[in-house]
Length: 93
Ligand SMILES: [Zn+2]
Image (cartoon, rainbow, N blue to C red; front, side, top):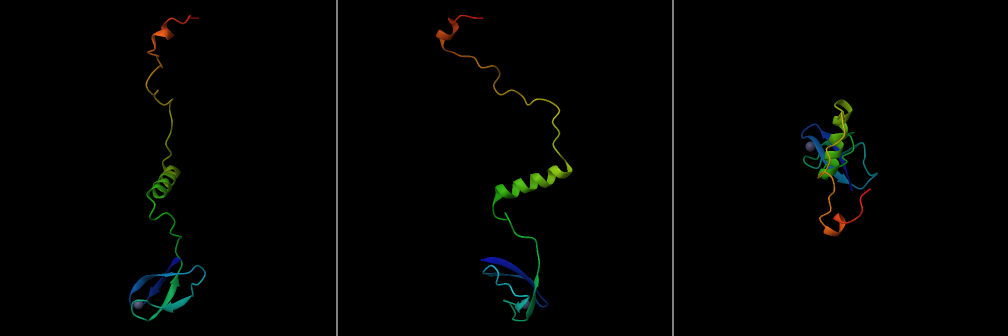
C-alpha cells in the first residue's frame, strides 16, 4: 500500500492509502465525496524511522556546514599497558 495525496476543494489536502500503481488523477474525497485531484509530492521515505531521519538530516546539514577536521581525534584510553606481571619480565629492546 502507498499513500497518495489528493487536494479537495472542501477539505484541502487528504491522504489516501491504495495499492501501488492504482492512483488515479481524480478520485472522490474520502471525507466529503467531492472530486479531489492528485497532488504530486516527494516520496515519504524514512518518516517513521529515526535512524534514517537522522542520517538524512546529517547529510543535508553537511552540504552547507561540513564538519572540518583540523587534527587527529583524541586517543582512546591512552597507551595500552598490560597488568600481567609476566609481561614485565619479558626482554626489552
Ligand atoms: Zn473533501
